[in-house]
Length: 189
Ligand SMILES: C[S@@+](CC[C@H](N)C(=O)[O-])C[C@H]1O[C@@H](n2cnc3c(N)ncnc32)[C@H](O)[C@@H]1O
Picture 1 (cartoon, helix red, strand yellow):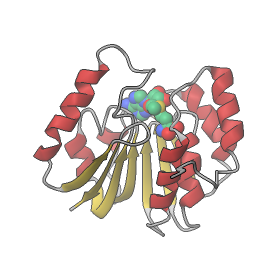
Picture 2 (picture 1 turned 60 degrees about the horizontal axis):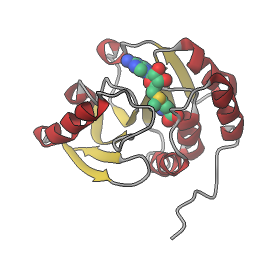
Picture 3 (picture 1 turned 45 degrees about the vertical axis):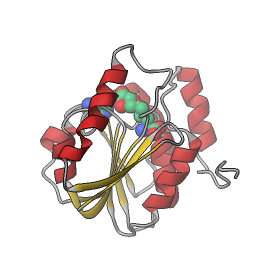
Picture 4 (picture 1 turned 180 degrees about the vertical axis):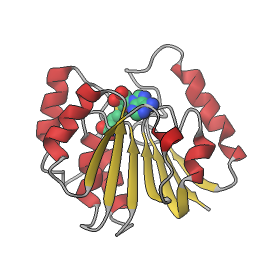
C-alpha cells in the first residue's frame, strides 16, 4: 500500500522552501498533513484550532481540506516562524494567525470543532483544559508521539507520561496510531 499523499496544498512547497532557509525542521510530515486535510473536510462550518503554527505546513493542509465556511485560528509563540505562515496563508479569509504562548489560558470563545495540538500546552500538559474547549464530537489530533530527531534529550519521558495518563480523560475517545510521526486521534464524548 502506497500511503504517499497524492494531492498537496498549493502553498506547501513554498512554505517548506522558506522553512529550509530558516532551518525550521518541525513541520508536520505529509501523511499527517493529508490526514489533517481529510479530517478537516469532515467538519464543514467548523471552528478549528492549531496550537503551534510553526511555518504553516499543518495550517496549509488544514486549509486544503476545509470548506469555505470553516475557520482556523493558528497560534504560535514565535513571531519569526509564524511570519512565514502568514506570508503564504494570511490572504485566506478562513485563517487567523495569533501570536501568543498563552492561548489556552486566555481563550473564552465558543467550543472548537477540531484541534490540532502541536506544542506542549494542550498535549504534554493541560490536556484536560483543551478537551474541555472541544464541542461534543469535536476532534483532537496530536502528532510527534514517536521519537523525533528534533526532540530534546528529556522529551521521551514527557511523551510517555502523556500516553500513560490518557485513560484519565473519560471524555476523550481516542486511538493512538503507530503511523507517520506517531499520532493520537480523539473525539470529545
Ligand atoms: C512542531 S512545531 C509546529 C508545526 C506545525 N504545527 C506543522 O504542522 O507544520 C511546534 C511549534 O509550537 C510552537 N510553540 C511552542 N510553545 C508554544 C505555545 N505555548 N503556544 C504556541 N506555540 C508554541 C513552537 O515555537 C513551534 O513553532
